[in-house]
Length: 149
Image: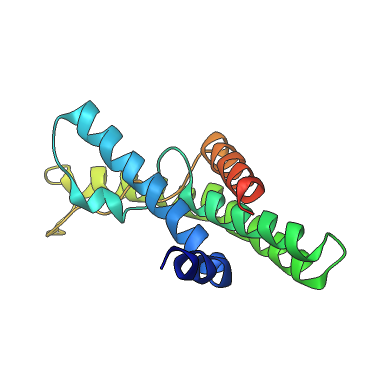
């Protein structure tokens, strides 16, 4: 039974480990949010943004595992590394900018008399990450990738 579970995890580690990294970081954010706000927000499990970046942790854990398994000269490592850079750039750049724009738009539509726009719900403001959040996520991913056999 145990040997079968270990074999399963070894065979599917490129799926299981990133999922566990993502879930662990999102669970940490949920618990941190619960402790700091004293409110339960189940949406926090699936929301993007915040410290640390689960996106960065997932892609760097994958890249590190690929590097260990097939080597730094492998095309798979190159693909994984470039993919990681794109994801981290997007998290700290494009998605962060979209979050800033959402914050400004939320303020505009809430200003009485400024617009005739009626809004049913606020735009999500926490979409991206600061460079520090991306870096910390990458460090977590690197550590996880290194300790997974």
